[in-house]
Length: 580
Image: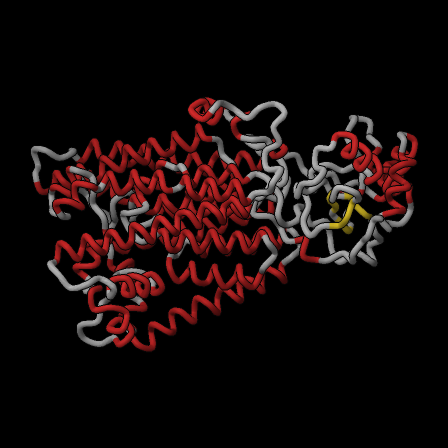
């Protein structure tokens, strides 16, 4: 027997990913079926997924668990790549020639992290003050205090090893949360678990802490946990600066969806959490709370940024000019993100808007160090770009990774390093590759067809067409679902002159209910996918005959139940939580 619970507003939050227009995972298809690179790479494990295989029939968790385990592969490669420095120490210029440089042992020695978190919170003379945001500084001080006494090289090696283990755990969690954010396409998280960019950058600096917290916030948002999403975003902002752009993307897309109030609540939680962390550190150690801000204010153009090109040419830009360009880049990112979120023909996903804004900030910032590319990895996976584009970007990152270390080595040993002109070539190639990611994302979001919003008279015509095209079953389904007149639900099975389906999905005001087949009956579920629009009776009979979803947790397409504007809480809000 069909049971219907009261409709709940939680389904109407805008999704992290968009509903349609995915070039890789159309309709939830496995990447090995539609992505040539993934299909070629799958030959080592038996080839592409078969015609009759049902990917994801057991849910996203088994896939997420396998991918989290696979994330140890790039972590192992990252540790292996730094084997020379682990064995012989991080000495200049050898650490640049062997490309095994890491900020972690350098920060441990220069910031006095061996004094521990107690000395950091006590403040005063001799307190450790790493040039990091407060939450990252807290974690660095905590882990530094766990290192036993010994020689400087042994302590640096132990500190690096401790952070390698912690980073491996955070990358596994990052992969898990990314898979959970796109539950109908969890294999997108393979672009986190197996990314070459992770192997190159994750052990250079402690950026993985902020990246993992930002991914956890997006996962919480996708599960309609707005309080947890805001709190986790606040922690991410206290660990890195770029999650501010993710919060801005959530606000912009929510405004487009008519959910400004929910976005305000999320932003409030994020602000309270971030300010609390800053205040906790500032009360005890004011210098440690603002160390990262002061370091940014006083810094000149750094490596990886376009602002360093004049320096390579022998005419460095003044500090105030570089700072002005960076601030302008943040303002430009917000304007570009707002235009994409509010002006695209179809509402984009949060990840798409966030990726475009992060790219603008990175290419216009004071510096674009190699570890900052880690910020983009989960966003690229959530957007669903192809593996070909990911690997092209990773190739440019690898080229710049080698170029920057060889250029720094050449400062100490001029006849063995990379000349400034060749380093500029690698830098420009990387900037072009990152900008290409933003361009692909923009095109993906902008080329989606707009949602149809017919006039009330057109809706009546659609109802009549649905009744004429076999809408009797749909009308019965509409009555069974409690949606009002049967002809209204029958209209969902009708087609217009162009052969496209008509239905209440195009209404300016609607309610939605979601259903799944439990083995003996259809029942309402908390999450669903608004991909197809068919009357419940027709959908039920087809799926019973096929048996495709029987006895599984796979969620079925949803059933639309139109209501009058007086009963509807707001406009059509698009993707329900939990599905693309």
